[in-house]
Length: 293
Image 1 (cartoon, rainbow, N blue to C red):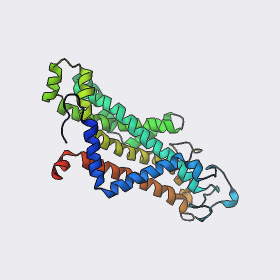
Image 2: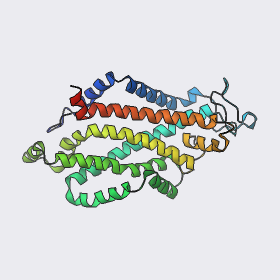
Image 3: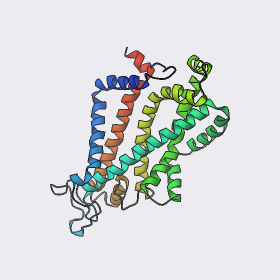
Image 4: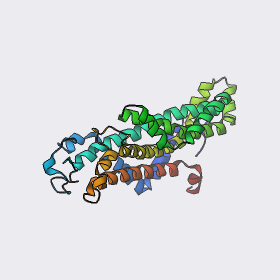
């Protein structure tokens, strides 16, 4: 993959063309992308897929196995698991997309700043190193414990834990590019530092950022499910795959379907995101691009 010179006008066309070329010969990536699209449509159209309230309690139908009436069965309170799983996909996808977008945005800004300014690098890089020395799940648990349980709070907590990954990636790219001849040319024609950063260096970070964002989204979905399973994530009145599994963990031997279906959806979603990320990496990795020529 080539560097994009002054102006970066070919960035969007080049990246999109490489992704299309790679996916055209990667059926697995197409299937994974299709699964994510179906999940997203299902999350948006959840009220149309099931008319049952996901919080509706009915002791008379508790612990029922999967059937034509209740596709995924019911839990210990008689709630329809299919409905709860579909509504739970809203939380997982919202967290995955939200964290990926916010972590990429703030991490890119910090990475550009630290890679181009030595004073900022000396301060902010040490902060990023400190955050990276602590497991993301522990940071998220600590931050959610300080705030009221909410989906927004979970997104913010996981975003703070994931920002250092993006910042270190962008910093590395910036350090590599800041002494390149085309950057010197930009300086020589009077480009300001913001122009150099956002017009000439930022376009060259687009390819690795796309890959990194996909893996951050998958990681965020898993962390959110873990937090909800532990009772530190989304409020219990909001169905999520993590708290659905938490409700059924003590009944696993009697009614394994309570845990099985949300766990299956979680595994498929994370796997699909990772496959799409791998396909993007294969398309945008310069070494793989040379090997396929």
